Image (cartoon, helix red, strand yellow):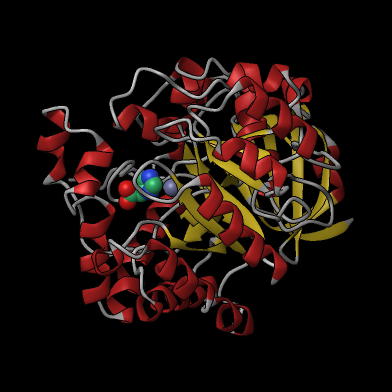
Length: 420
Ligand SMILES: O=C(O)CC1=NCN=C1
Ligand SMILES: [Zn+2]
């Protein structure tokens, strides 16, 4: 009889997502799944995965009868801007009038209005606000996530944001991976001197490395922000200092950020709405992961979405993320992104689950630690109020989480109706 801490029995479908590496192209059609399964957890790790009936070999401190529900690895959100001050609901009217995102930015709104609020906010205020959003992400089933800076656009505030992320990394149940996005927009004070601004951001890298404030460096390669050539030299300098690379690429205008990401072997290229055929081919060759953000395309009111099917046909590894941020995608609801991926990116449920677990984990350098349920790995598990894995993209706009387990501990449970 093996003693364990937690035993999950009567699991209808258990998605283990077991994989030795990211799933590229057609490999994304495969799901590692066990029907009528049992999962045992001891000392925060997965101790056993097996068929119904094997529960008799275990003595557990706590047993959860999963009532034939779906059980999966905790979700991974590989692209968020979750540390920020203020909000941008006032821009909704401009969006409704059809004012383009880049015009709002050019008029000093958008990212720059969040910069003002983030510069004003104290570190403690930013910690509390981000903690609120992270708690909500956890309640939606996210157990690992990336968090970017990028609302400071000066040394003091960029470091403040990254220190906020580090405090949350050390205190919040969600495992966080930090990215320095100082090159997110050109601040008003550098409107005429963008190159000077980029050089100023690069001077922060030594301190960011020394204080272990970020593993990746990202840039917004976009019309009216940074050119491909500016981005190439900026990212090459960051790469030379040992940072992994990410790019906000071809989100609105097809400048060729996709090709640049592949040329530099960035770990991921994100957005890719305007990615060219050539860029998509290069992603497949370089192994750069395509992180697609259909929630942003929807929220910006665009009709053209990233060509996920073309990418997978060409052998690209595709991941999905919320892009949670106060302007272009103000939602923590990663389950809603599953529905956008199904209806707008035409991804199948199998592809979606690979994109939200194993591939998303590899897109932030956590492929060996997150996104899979494997004996010996940390037990980050979600029990869903759903009969099977196809159900989540299908039944949209609600939270299907029943229970979230992080490193073997129950950290979030469905809110039961409080008796009147
Ligand atoms: O608008 C924002 O705050 C976030 C964003 N960065 C690049 N695209 C969207
Ligand atoms: Zn983003």
